[in-house]
Length: 354
Image 1 (cartoon, rainbow, N blue to C red):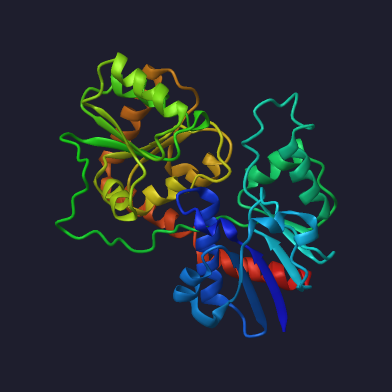
Image 2 (cartoon, one colour):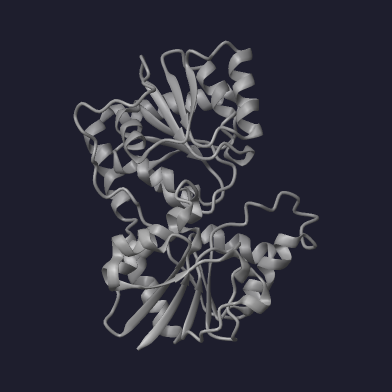
């Protein structure tokens, strides 16, 4: 029986992309594990996982000390899947090694990055890999642009949509509710997310409010809040911080449109989440986002506020002309990103390496 080790300790961080990837791929594998496979989850809070997945997996508790060479895990698995490109947990033995690459967005200075600690660590992971999976074609092309990739099997396996069912009670209301039609966006408020461009957008759209969800204790969030205050938009733009799954679904369901002007994305999961609710999506025309948004999204090529407003108004006009049909197409595209399908593809990769 093949024994696969899933280095999945980022599953504890469900408010971040790596955590979401770990959790939903584990769920997909749980639904599709072949009878001739055993898989071991590596996580800090293994009891939570046991409660959900039972005996379908083996479990190994995460300890940070395993980052150091002498304390590495010494059991010799048939395959080690490094699900998180930045983890320092590595196998003790030289065994088949699958690396999943999510993005290279942390490279800010393209002329001076090769001597950075994180680059050296990532290059070593690539070098030891038996095969690599990427979450998007963009993740693959950018990895080849910045790193030396050996001649090994490579696969692009898109993430799935984690929202399978809409579970909002009819009378549910979150703490923050807009009094006017509103646009919605979500993500940790970092510079690369480019949420500050939405301040200018709202200045040029008098009929809309804006709600941005995500970690708002960052320096970028403070900068954006200053812009909001300076332009006297505090009654129209709200940074609401981290939200629950129920709140997130409420905002997707009730917003007029989803806006996502991110500069760099390895995948762009919120776009397909918004599509699940049939909402028009206005997104940046760069990195992985056109790959995810397809022909049915509306794109910003740059971030001049008046231009962004024009694209928004034109896009909404197109959407409103045949709203029901357009919503159906958006939902259909969202359904094409499926974690069960992704898990089956990963299992086939596992088979090819064992």
